[in-house]
Length: 366
Image (tube, rainbow, N blue to C red; front, side):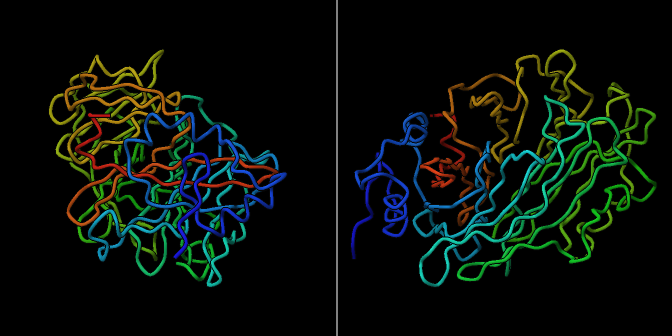
């Protein structure tokens, strides 16, 4: 078996290496600036795979890869294989989702992209769309949640399913979407959804989606709902509400819940509250939180900087990411790992994506 070719320190399969040569003048290994920028982090992680080259429309920016989650049959990091992934990019019409996969001939194909999703009305501090990679079943699955920063009644969620290699497809589930279903249609009592997050589960089980609901009177509740392909989510139901000390008049929060629960909002700066009991502000948290990890640590990637806080809001580390993107946390066997991806532009709209993983327990040692 031929060894993979090294391109600027990146192990790239033969097909990808050949494609790189076709897109570049000559066939000398190119210097990939993106790989160099992220090296301080990636050298401490396990590279679990690459996809490339993938051709995207010229003008695509902020390109990132979200690979499917490992299945329950994968019990060690050495068994993780990256043969496909959801691609999210910014285009003139908005954000676009496509799906890249390796076909039966070993070539990388890109399934037809969905219509661009408008970024009109986005708040610069919050992600308008949250992309949650759900557990892999007979398909790769991605939940796209649109959280409107001004009007929670416009919040929507849709499930995208993609064929696993060597097949390839990308479609809404059910096929009747769009139009996208509003999240309020899943809530008994008509509560507004102001925040959401997902908790990975062991043994390939369905991820537990966590929701922050409000009744508009300062009363908030926290509930969990499993993903259901037919209706996107099983009816969320009526939460047990509590209103003491919660901010009102805000339609968008970053929200996470496991052993502890947190909500965060922007008001001249980030305000993070531990809402496990009576709300307590974590004054040490000054960045947007993007994930609550299974060990209780809070992860931020705001401004292309990896910042990690302990459960009480004390900063554990901060370092530049160099374009590396956090994908999700998922179990490999019984060990939770944090997965990251790196997009590398090679030429003429062609991209290579590398995927890295590190045990969650080792994150604070980066």
